[in-house]
Length: 272
Ligand SMILES: C[S@@+](CC[C@H](N)C(=O)[O-])C[C@H]1O[C@@H](n2cnc3c(N)ncnc32)[C@H](O)[C@@H]1O
Image (cartoon, rainbow, N blue to C red):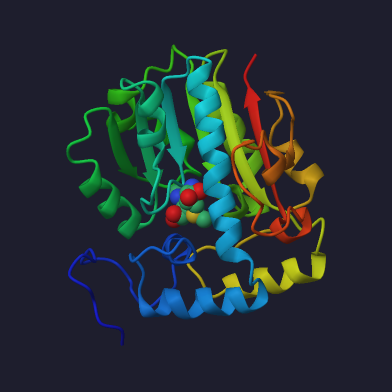
C-alpha cells in the first residue's frame, strides 16, 4: 500500500496509475503517487524521450494560445486539462488579455482538486470534473455555461487527450459534437501521439498503458486528420508538433529536432 499524502482527495484510488498523474510525473510535478511513478518509469524505459515530449506538448499549446489571443479569442474550453503545471492556459491567455475566460475539464480527481485550489482566486477561470466523451453534459454544466458564451468564438483545446479516447468511443464524433456547439470563428487545438514513425515502439508504449486508468492509442496521420473534419486548418496545418509555428527565440531542440522521437502531431482548426 502506498502512503496517502495530505493533498490527496479522499475518494482517489492511489493504487491504479492515472494518466493525469503519470503526465504530471513526466513534467516533473509532485502530484503523483508511487504507483503512478512506477508505471511512468516503465513507460520511460520504452520511451526515454517522454519527459521532453511532454514539455514540447506544453510549448506547442502555449504557442497556440498566443496565436488565439492575437486574433481576439477570449474564451477557452480546455478538455482533459490535466494537473496544473507551469504555464496553465489561463495564465498564458491572460498575459495577452486579462479578461480571457477559461474552463478546465478533467475526469481525474487529483487534477480537479489541484486545479480548484489554484483557481480559488482566479475570477475568470473554473474547473469541472467531467468525462469529455459526454459533450452534452459538459456543455450544459453551469460551470461551463456560467463562464463561456457559446454565441461568441471559443477555443476548444484537446491537448494530449484524444489518444486516450478509444475508437469505440468515436473520438471524431466527440470532437464534432463540441464543434457543432461553437460559433463560427471558434477554434479547435489538438495534439495527438502517432504510430507513423515508430509503429513497433508505439505498440510497446500502448502495452504499458493497459495498466493505467486510461489506455493510450497511437494513431496514423490520416486517423487524426479525420478528427478535424469541419475545420479549416490554420497554417501550417496538421504537422509534427515541433513544426507548428516554432518560436524563433527558442534555443536548440532538446531532441535534435527529430520528429520521429517526438512522434506527435499538432493542429489548430478554425470553424468557418
Ligand atoms: C496527458 S494528460 C494532458 C494534460 C493537458 N492537456 C496537457 O497537455 O498538459 C491527459 C489528461 O486527459 C484526462 N482525460 C483522459 N480521458 C479523459 C476523459 N474521457 N474525460 C476527461 N478527461 C480525460 C486525463 O485525466 C489527463 O489529465
